[in-house]
Image (cartoon, rainbow, N blue to C red; front, side, top):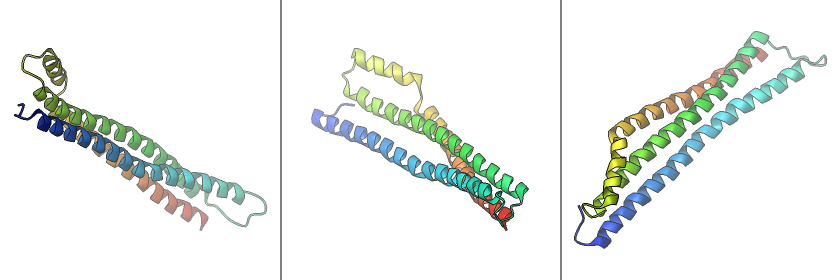
Length: 170
């Protein structure tokens, strides 16, 4: 579907490619913004609480710790770290699928810019047959949902762990 002006075709291609690159950057920045606090909250809480437990177990301490509640809180923070790791994995996978969808879209544009009967056009068409955009889009959405659930679980583990740790010290 080449237009009359090849410069216009190239401008469209460049715009599609720029959109793809910006989407990758934005998604990566967003995932880092979500994931870093999960690691810091759960890991930091676990380390700080274990430090408190160590200090409270000394002979000089007047602080009493209810051990079952303390263990449950610490276990939830450790679970929150595992949830953050799963969120990282699923975020990475979903980004790969979303990137593949955008690449397939870009290849459609590239193929349309190549002359009919071009050997390169046939090669690009065969690559497109390996993946369907709809199939990759579906995988991207599923893995992104998993990322969201794992991130929410990590935050939930932090909050419930904090409540249990608080109960163990009161």
